[in-house]
Amino acid sequence: MKPFLSLSLFSALSLLTVSAHAQAVSQSDRQMIAHAHWLNAEQARPATASDTAILKAVPDLTKTAGQYHDLCGTRVTPKILPLDVGGAPGILTAVIEEDPACFGGDGARYTLLDRTRHVVWQNSAAAIAILESRHDGVHDLSFGGPGPTTPVWSWSTARHAYQLRVVIDTE
Image (cartoon, rainbow, N blue to C red):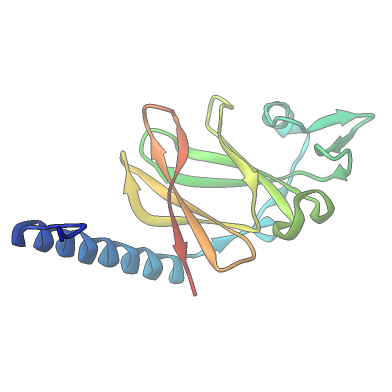
């Protein structure tokens, strides 16, 4: 009977090397997440009238009768948090909308805008960390929330946006 999978010694060693490398990268990512400095709405400042142009760039954030409302129609006070990610984007502006009823266990939605007010990332999260690792010269980001995993997002120069690189099992 013919074996289902036949590997040469070289192929087997190559697979073991790739597997060991993947584990090392994963362990490095876990350590990076464990030592990350997390930022959330507590470190942000309430938006002011001077932030109007920034807030207009946030999808689904509306202003009626002087009050801001999130995508669920709930009145919110947006908060502003500058994030220095280095590289070409430099300082991004995080607009944080807190509304646990709308954004679930994460409790808030983060929208990251570049200096031209282009959205480079948007989703619900409980906190954000600027990581030591870099891609295309720009710091990777992690967005925390409840649960046993933490995503790491890397900068894509071609897309001019953050894209999911890896999800790390933190337990």
